[in-house]
Picture (cartoon, rainbow, N blue to C red):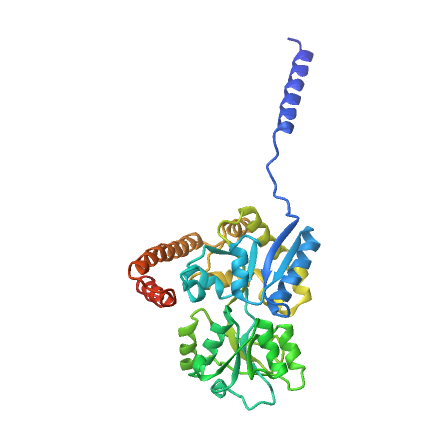
Length: 385
């Protein structure tokens, strides 16, 4: 074979290999979905505003539209998620209640739910507000006062914890039924209630503060160990916060309030991994956009805050798609895989126990109205809470 022939053959082989490589299917790259859907908190709440800002930022960066559907109570948000009407829901304490069959999930028609989260923000400060010109200055002063009660809402549990701080219960106040979280806030404006529970950064809080009667926040100082001990018996996931962002709050006039993971961007464990991955990525990568439009987004929607809330929590379970993204950007810590598995195992233990207890309850002819108490006792005997 001549040198020229060898060169031609070598060139032909190289070209053949190159063309073969070009014809190989490309490694699939996930494109941004055209739309994502989410249940949000009621119009006027900080949760609703947060997801509105987030939706605008995601549309700007990825071209993905976020269809947000507001709901005035936690049950509505969870039921729509369970029914598959949305891919995500913004939730707070319901994440905890759903995983472990607590509160409304202790009713026989519900039970534990396989919830997962893709992002965790921090509650900027949840507390009790009263009119500034009222005679209510501390929690104990709420005795005999009118307070909004929202059917099917975790807001009621929050108020129960606030009342417990002052040694009170719902039996010590007058319940006034309200249709939504926003309605119970505005009841302070129309005078139908004497107190409301509220996120201090919500637009409704600013509205009340600028109203004719003004707004006073009741204080829950961390130094009051006994008060906090009573509150944590009601909702053990609460922690104190010195809030300086929000209506009538500043460095000079801080509000000693409650905080917890809020909102957690919640989904079902069965959600497609790529969708969960995209949502985590989108929230992280749009931070430079949405954080410039809101002080509370800048302060409470950080990646560092998300990781800190996950690490401190003993119950939140991340969706595998979210874990994949966090590993991809190099922030997943050693030991977190084992922690995830521990939490998943605990949730599975509770779900298995539920099936056993339901069967037991039918054999013992326990009525539906008595089932939650029976279940809660059995759960505590096995899992300790």
